[in-house]
Image 1 (cartoon, each protein chain N blue to C red):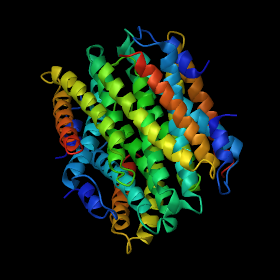
Image 2 (cartoon, each protein chain N blue to C red):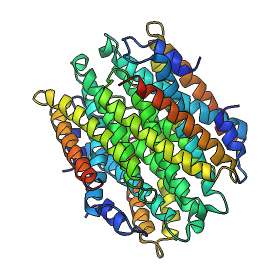
Image 3 (cartoon, one colour):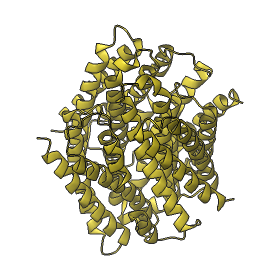
Length: 134
Length: 134
Length: 134
Length: 134
């Protein structure tokens, strides 16, 4: 059991979302934000950085969006389906773009391969949570 | 001319967005994020904090989403219309909810009145930019 | 092996820090930021929120500082011992204050108990990493 | 009068800091975070990006640290001199390193010239505020 799940179980009010899917989404978003931040920096350290600028930019966008979404999803008290739904759509768009871009470099750069996997796992977790909200 | 506009003018590549509306959106998002952070803390300091918990939660969500969007909009190199469009939709949802909630307390709390104005100005700046993207 | 460790192993340049302690600090900071965000929201949802405002404020500060530090530590390319050292000092100060405040409420609120533990684990991980830098 | 100053005037409790210097520091940190985010992206778009990777990394660190500090300084309710003091020291270290690095490229890249100025103005605002706290 992750700390996210443990914290969810202590929440003093009802939560209008599937707690398992919510915890999975928060953990996937947190990991994706961290992996994208690392991948951007690893790309920046490659000799062929000039070929990786699009990857760096997409990594940084994905890190910012997923990081903000992890925080918003961790606040069940102010849950608003419109805010959460549109934000999950932005995460799905960012993870899809970043996963595609990173996978283009996956055969040359192991950090891009891991990051592409992290983006796709996050995309699925966001889609699974979003599917329960409509 | 704000520093945001000055920085936009030094950008070495073409930008596929109206630079004036882009700078206005970045500045409005940055100000809204800052104002929402302050308003949450001012609400937390009120004797009647128990009546302001929804306002605090919405303020924190709006601050996180607008802060992330200001960063993403400041990265023209990785511009992706789907990411930017969905993120602006999330900002519009957050600013709308936070503007409404803050305006409910505006007659009692001057910080909520200023914050509601900031949210609405940000909402309009996001809508104006989004309108040029479709 | 966490994703943080896997990403560190793919980094294309030397890293002037103990990789095991660095990965442990990044993971502890990321978890602490997430737990503090959740604890602030759980406190906000308690009927006795008026007694928890100091805890909420300290949680929010700790979340912001640890979140920023996790990102900075994930960028080995721009490693600067002065920046990293002072930032770790700020994390230690925030985790110490937040751990103390949360432990005051730990017997009444399980989320505060878990958060106090998370802050203390993070404090130790930051101290361990800082000790290798001097 | 900026919105930051207006919000400070509505704060319901005493503030143990010089309000003028506090507002100046928050505004300088917010602007510096935004300028560093833009400068990193402009550097990433230059043909000579391989010569600017240190600048990009330092910009990203400075943006994260100053952004977090702007949020922490905006929370007067949980003011803790040790947290704020160490965090301002981290901002001073980051602004000093980023100002130095950007000024090395200032004659070639106008975005680096503007960013160096923004870092130095922020460094001074942090020093001025820190001087009143000891």
